[in-house]
Amino acid sequence: MKSVILRTMTIYLLPLLLIFSIFLLFRGHNTPGGGFVGGLVSAAAFSLYLIGFGIDKVREILPVEPVKFVALGLLFAVGSALFPVFLGKPFMTGTWMEGRLPIIGSLGTPTVFDTGVYFTVLGVTLNIIFSLFEDKE
Amino acid sequence: MNSVLVLPVVVPFLSGIIMLFLWRYRLAQRVINLIASTVSLSIAIYLTWYIKTSGIQSLYVGAWQSPFGIIFTADLLTVTMILVSGIIGFATALYSLGTMDEHREHFGYYPLLQIMIMGINGSFMTGDLFNMFVWFEVLLISSFALVALGGTRKQLEGAIKYVVLNLLSSSLFVVGVGILYGLVGGLNMADIAQRVPLVENQGMVTVMAMFFLVSFGIKAAIFPMFFWLPASYHTPPAAISAIFAGMLTKVGVYALFRVFTLIFIQDIPFTHSVIIFLAMLTMLSGVLGAASQMEFRRILSFHIISQIGYMILGLGLMTPLGIAGGVFYIFHHIIVKTNLFFVSGIVNEIKGSYLLKKLGGVLKLYPILGLLFLVPALSLGGVPPLSGFWAKFAVAKAAVQSQEYWALGVSLLVGLLTLFSMIKIWNEVFWKEQKAELAGEQRLLREMPKLKVFMMMSPIALLAIITLIIGLYPQPFVEFTNEAATQLLNPSMYINAVLRGGQ
Image (cartoon, rainbow over all chains, first blue to last red; front, side, top):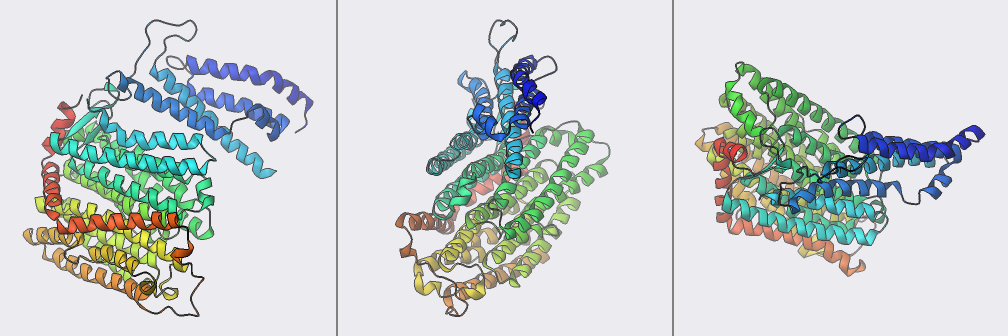
């Protein structure tokens, strides 16, 4: 699609949406938000870019295959589940860091798990959208 | 600390993730798959030893006390299944290296395989009914992808039947879990088992039992919900249909064993009579279906159904010997059936067909392959001294003890007809001269790379040896299954381990 308005806007919207998605991710554990929504928002940001510029341009700014995001997300998830085992607690026990960080709040394995969800959702969504677009061309 | 209980799930999962990172690297995926299956097998062996020596163990995932959190529990039935899934996973990994085509490997065959094994192991380990549903979905979704992978016309046709029937079964399952939750207010199986006797409306519990019987029955392919199995299992490549034939229906059988020895034991005269009745019909319809087939893998698929009947019969009898026989049967059957599918795949590699009419003369070419076919085939038919004989003997003896003479008669007749089918395959594929005008293009083993031949033949030999060992030294296996049956028939052992024993 060759719309000047869309293209111009997308260039500004893409970073904004990505930042917003990360904000949603970290806001997640006590308030509305979380990895799933965050992943969808960031996938939406890339899709917007895809509609504006075409699939080749997206592949340029996103040099890794979407399936790698899925793998990364799953790795985060299983890592967060395995981490407590090394501390001598049962599998998947929520383990929290002491103290609070500014903005993010407290960090712990659920946050890591949510980050995993974020990447998995991003990867799966992009994978679907990419294959739809590649099919057309 | 029982963290070892999560390993049968975590190891396949981790290896699947690593293979996703190496998405386009075929060689790396093959190596990782083999390593992961070896590790899984060793963990399974360790776990079997661990549970055998220290009794039923449970792990409270996330440190949530049961019955509130999800738990992983391993009793002897569980570890039997985990062990056999480890063996089959290893054999399939080897066999896939020899037979899987590049195209399918390229599109994620190995990650899917590992994720499916994760789902299978998860459904064995979990002690939570809803969690079991989730694991069923994990294994089903990857199996959907595996059955359709490659996308040939025949495969997609089989996949549609497979997917639709299994989705139906899953939705019944989740509805059943929902209603049961409404009745007893718990999802933890041990907790449900404790609460079921307190339910005022016992009729409703029996209704739920039938609900679960239908849902797991579809997955286990018992009468009358078996028709999806022979319609789909012969379509994917041999390695995939072999692990499907070995493991997937047995997940349903495992679930039946679990709920009908733990939860739904409040009206045994009714529920378990229904199971015996269905078992007889399952055996008969499976074996009669096989008799009319003329395609290698379709015959084998129908025989899965008839053999499921024996396992369910053992469950329906609900005596120590019956349950032990059922468990023994599951173990023996998975190994034998997977092996037969492997052999069918090799015959296809050599002769390029699965149709009995087009095949023939394999014995003359490869006597060893004929022998390797005979071991599982005769075992399936129940010829002593192979493993199938002891399995059938235990179930038949249990039927006599419970005075279920109809079931006894049916099981003996079905054994005979099974032998008939196996001899039919033997005659058509190995014995008779191949008709020259029907023969396809032939590829001799010596024309194939040596490594490929080794990787195709070694799993068959491995499984045949296991069959022989079980057949010749049945004592430890019989004792093991007897112990498993004792645990299953005393639900209080399981309940205690889950509700009070975990960490």
